[in-house]
Length: 120
Image (cartoon, rainbow, N blue to C red; front, side, top):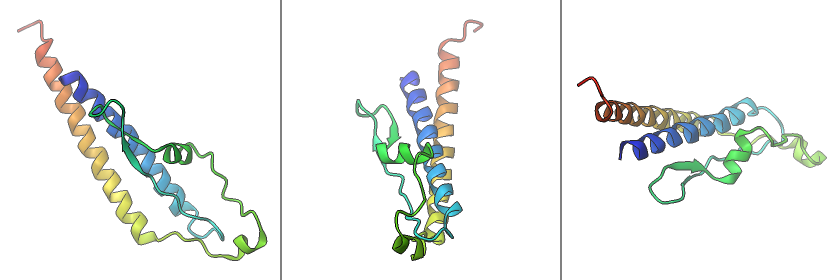
């Protein structure tokens, strides 16, 4: 059980870090004309109960594979659709999720340490 908790916690750390990357990309491009903000969508890993990951779109965005260059002149003249207040809220949620996942990893590490403690 402790090893599955460790796996779940580390997947939460990774997913929340990637979500923070997406939010940071949105904030960095807030003044870029024609930029469309991206969303990090969490989904349950397979098999069920084994952790969390970002959707394929979220992983693609956090890997910085997206291009923010406008495709035509009308897109270049549009202001970006980034809402800084919602990005701040999302960032706080992702940070809290990261901290909670770190606590899961810490608790799993302590439980594994007591199970495998050969000096006791």
